[in-house]
Amino acid sequence: MNKHLFLLFFLLAGGFLQAQTNYSLEDYKKKPYWISMMDEANPNYFEVQKAFTAYWEHHTMPEGEGDMNIKEKEKNKRRFSKKEIRIAREEAAMRMAIKKYRWWIMKMEPFVQDDGSIKRQ
Image 1 (spheres, rainbow, N blue to C red):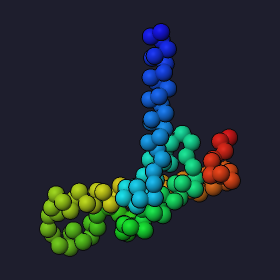
Image 2 (image 1 turned 90 degrees about the horizontal axis):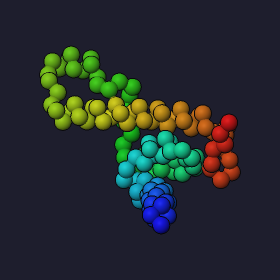
Image 3 (image 1 turned 120 degrees about the vertical axis):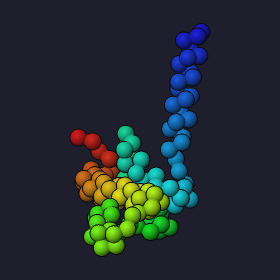
C-alpha cells in the first residue's frame, strides 16, 4: 500500500512540474522564459521563437559585443557604481543568451517537425 502511495505521489508531482512549463503570452512578455525553454528535454521550436519575440517586443535589446566599454571607462577615468556594474553584467548575460538563442535556432531548424517538436538523431 505504501509503495502505491509513494508511486502515486511521484506521478502527481511530475504532472505538476510539467504543467508549470506552460506559459502564456503575457508571461513571455514579462520574463525571458525562452532562455530556459531552450534547455528543456523536448523544447517546442515555435514556442521558443514565440517567447523570444514576445519578450523583445517589450524590452530593449542590448547593443554591442563587449560587456563594458573599456575605452569609455579609460576616457572618463571614473569609477562605475555598483548599480552600473550590475546592469552591465545583466546586459552581458543577456547578450550571451541572445547569441545562444541564435545559435540554437540555426542548429535546430533542420530538425523541426510540423508540430514544432525537434527530431533528435
